[in-house]
Image (cartoon, rainbow, N blue to C red):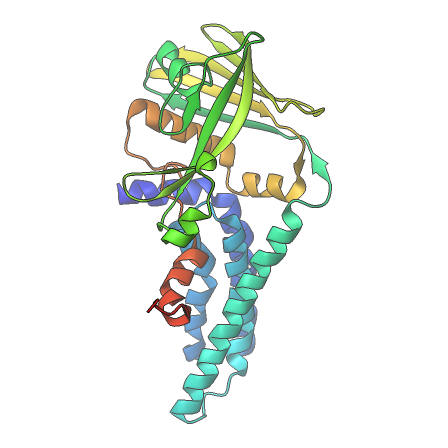
Length: 314
């Protein structure tokens, strides 16, 4: 199971791995070529930090890019550190160095977050294909949006007189349950608390079925605004081992960075694999079907006991 999980993440996130590993490997090669000292071989592990991050925190492309930038800076900086200093001074310099790397890591994420929703937008077409052992009619009922669907990921309500139906998409879990103050800050209408104390955020959308046959299912996304609607088309083809499903989604205009992130993560195919896993009740390996984790959140919870300045009420 673990090998399958690792193999899936390596393949599904291959674009992100290439993008983030190439700078670190080049940086390591340049530094080692100039300063060929055996003790610098440890920087080879630093060059692999983006790969390690992808395997542990899949689906966090902004973090992985930030890890890559910080790793490149670390690789170029380490040969210039003075290792002849006394142990105490060496420890202080090392702590300062790690702090600067974390500041750089957070700064890169902040820049991406600030610029993500800005700049030009474009309408993209996402295509994905996967296979399932289920029959076409069973798979169609399980993974398409239609009134009456109600599962862990989607809740669809009855249609109105115009055929519009409201759908709630339950987004990925936050791995660490927030404390009571953070929980009270979330509106009840946009989150669900699971039995494990985790938080699910909900996205409210309105859809309309434009066409539905035994082999095809077309739904249009409506915003109620003067915008180009999004369209999702499922096509089902029976073959000897089950069903081959192809999904084509014409999105609404999205910022370029959002489109880039979806392409790096191969999001459309991962989403389809997740839906098929749920329909087949198969062990989850898709990134969407795993509990959402973030390195920056784990780091914050690790640091919280040292930085929480709240005093107990007397």
